[in-house]
Image (cartoon, rainbow, N blue to C red; front, side, top):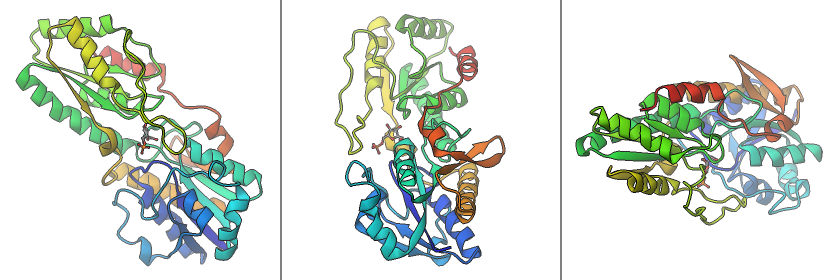
Length: 341
Ligand code: F6P
């Protein structure tokens, strides 16, 4: 076997360095060379690489971000697919590629595999919404950060007798909102997959305040629809063509103040959810995913990603990951709802 290339693409995620360390450690143990590709697909198209050995991945397990850098470039949007990557692959002797990325990245990885490159995917997003796997690394860290924020917001909200609307990431699915909302004891949680009724939200807040509670916390996913009567928020698009989200919490807060006399404040957690050190569970998961990715590369597998099924890691076709988006199960949201107010 030749050389394994590894890249991280799309938005960063706590645990990326732990995956890279797992990939490299397994390869080194097996006598295989690894080349790191800088800044995602951009580095693969423009031959920005770095050698990776055991020394270069020491001390990175708990570090946030990615030592390789990342970008939202795409070999099919900003290049000609495999032919744009071939010079880099050839110059570095890379015959297997481990791609750590979200659904957009995995879609490009699948296309490269269809063109004949040996590709192993590692699903990555704090949003936890990639199909085919039970969970993605980085999610637990994001939930912990959001839960800590909710705990802090609750004490200042109580001091001032306020409602606080906390906006968390979750482009089309509300995994972080639901988990952090349950863990933080949110009084209502709004997620993209469940339509909401402002009157019902307001009734719950009123009942809570009537029974003597001095504050309420609402958790909203960034991707929810605006409340009725409010315009869709239009932000700039990123280089993948996805709209940048953020700000719907202000509309929700405005609607609550319109319907009640409760003073309301907004906190948008944004990228703080992706920064910093991964929690222990994510470090373990990411390490396992990295080691397994190298094992699959060594076994000559291609066009598969490492997926979590229960407590096991399995190889699942990348196509499974890209054919749908995994939403919050109704039962989980119903459990959250039971504790609203
Ligand atoms: O892909 C996950 C995600 O965290 C989304 O929830 C969010 O909308 C997006 O990334 C923001 O990414 P960036 O601002 O880095 O482009």
